Image (tube, helix red, strand yellow):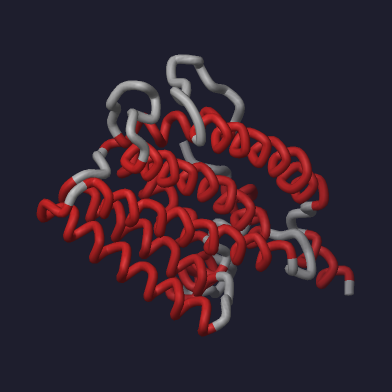
Length: 240
């Protein structure tokens, strides 16, 4: 069931009068729409695929693409985008070697690099959203994208820890989707208690994610939503 036409227009989700499709698509992309779509795609794939073998290569490629698009959409500096591209290539090469039989250490290294890349992307998107002159569609989409990126970067971090430490992260071997599930239930503090880190540093990291998730929701997203006045700019122009 879709949004009513008036509500979609207010949110900026429908073409403006006389606006051509390419222009409308560019406006949605500039509002972090493509970033959000890629983040959701990464969430779905991460939940369904294992971060091992060639599936790990696919996840690494999608995560790297998400990061580069996020950096470009956030107008990050050329050096940072170049650094993100270089790290993405390194992560992809490590994932490829691991898939060809290089061992779990290489897969863990690729996961750690992706966690770092996602941290860079989250920081740049958040900075871009917070420096907007007014709270609008771009700001809200940016904040939502950052929140979802946080859950994904911790998923990669948990997967890396599982492969680097001597024992399993949860005390038993699980699928990558379980790390994604655990990360988002931790981020939203809705954990069901069926998955608990067996020891450190997993417990410390999950506690940190819990704190970040609550602080982000309470201080940032709630504040942005309270300041958001859909259609205020248009009404101002009409009044002028």
